[in-house]
Image 1 (cartoon, rainbow over the protein chains, first blue to last red):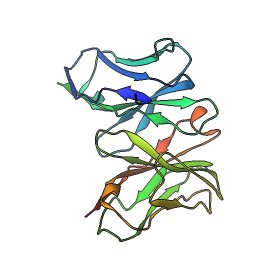
Image 2 (image 1 turned 60 degrees about the vertical axis):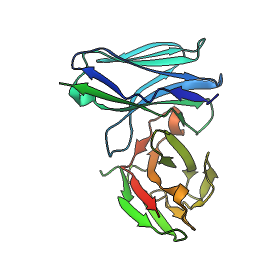
Image 3 (image 1 turned 90 degrees about the horizontal axis):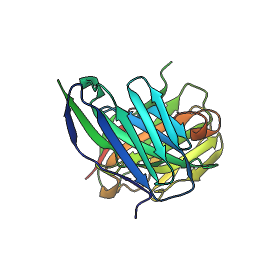
Image 4 (image 1 turned 90 degrees about the vertical axis):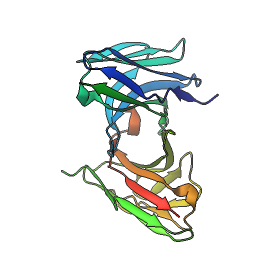
Length: 111
Length: 115
C-alpha cells in the first residue's frame, strides 16, 4: 500500500457545485496535512494547512482531517471556473523535512 | 520580489549528456528542495538543503547531485542523462523550520526531455 493515495480523476463539475477531494494514508506518524493547488504549467501553491483532526475553513474552502480513519478531505463550495487546477494533498511527519505528496486530482469547473 | 526562479524553462538532452538546472530564491529562505513530477505520479523529493553547505538525499536521489554554496542558489546537476529522467523539475524554498512552520514556495518548473 502506498503511503498516500489520491484519486487522480479527472473530475469535471458545473460551476456552483460543491467539490469533494480526498486522500487516504497509511503512515500513522503523519501529523501535518496540507492541500496544494497547481495551475497548468505552474508550480504548486499552498491552499490549506491543518494539524490534528477536525475542520479548518478558509472562505469557500474547508479542509477536514480524520486521523482515526487516516482520511483527509478538501471541500470547495460554490466552485468557480478559476478553481480548475490540480489539487495535491501533502503530509508530513513531525520533525521531518520530507513532505509526501499524493498524485493529485485534476479538477475542471465548467461555466 | 521574484520568489523562486528556475532556469531554463525547457530543455532537450541526448542520452549521456549532462546539465545543471538552476534555482535561485530572493526570500532569504534557509530551506530549499528539488522535486520531480512525472505525469500522474505526484511530486517526488530528490534532494533538499537546510542551509548553505548542508544537503541531504530525498526519496529519488540516484542520478542527481546538488550543492548549496549560498543561501540563494541551489543547483541540481544531472551527470549522465537517461530517458528515465524525463520529467518536470520543481525547486522550492521555505523559511523557519521547513514545511512545518511555513509553506513551500515553488518555482514554475523546468521541463526536461531526454531522448
